[in-house]
Image 1: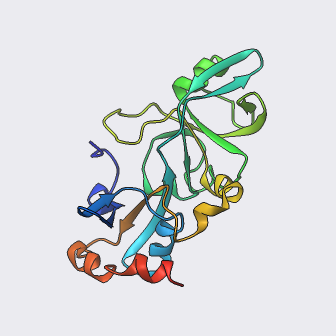
Image 2: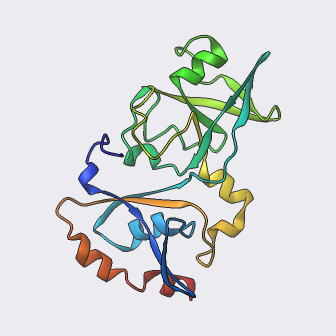
Length: 202
């Protein structure tokens, strides 16, 4: 799983040890600010990205009289700079900058539009009510990845509506980071041993 990305040996998911009655549990859910916080606070971290990959039911995307059920996730603006998903159209640095944007796979594009070309800027509706502008088309990618989706929406836009996720005391999305080449991961883990406790107490 997850071996097909560029610089894969430098990409890690942030996990959190949590005290539970039976001892210590390890959770993949993190605080909303975690990925960006690590990128801001530690020079070893080249880039951080947040993704809300769990608890999302398939939604309907509509274009004209076409209504298609599809699986999505919410991702922060640097998601496609960190993960090298192949793009047919759009720039990795730009496609998630606009909070009303949506990025779709080529197979979802064919289901909605009949093709996967010349559809940047077209408007689709999420759940038949929320307008979204297509800002990027992803080439269908290898399914041997833990990140499975047909479309991607802005995590920043979702966090603006769900402000609780911006607090260090809450846990919900997943955080991913890419380290500078040569970073000692064991030493970095020691360095951030009490990072969550310090941030939650600020």
